[in-house]
Length: 160
Image 1 (tube, one colour):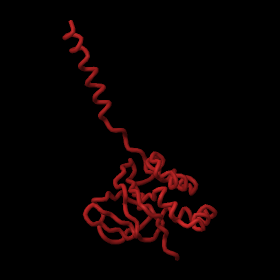
Image 2 (image 1 turned 90 degrees about the vertical axis):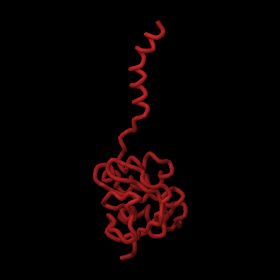
Image 3 (image 1 turned 60 degrees about the vertical axis):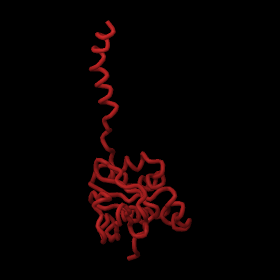
Image 4 (image 1 turned 135 degrees about the vertical axis):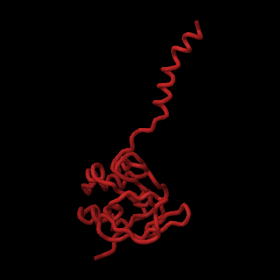
């Protein structure tokens, strides 16, 4: 009797195990930013700059997302300027975005064009990746429309 019940439960157990091990569909780049508490500042600024819909529906993108600690290191005067100038905020955030998906293992030393229009210098030595003078802290956060890499500094585009 017990053996019959166990045999009857096997298909249900297999189904539950399959559900537990399946990974959810990756979110968009915007959703990946919103999901990570260490990226709450950049997420708020992306929303304020009106970029969240673009990062949710377009792509593919690579977003070098500054952590909350990176924003704390930015001078207050610079943050005030960004908060009071939506066009400048959008330009700074777009400077962190590549209009393509670039995984850390695919980084080649050299410059790449950003969505903002300026170039960023990338380099890789083994598993270490740098973007300008920022170090990638957490690489390859997958999203349906791109990838996010957290960085330890806020990147400011060159003056025109």
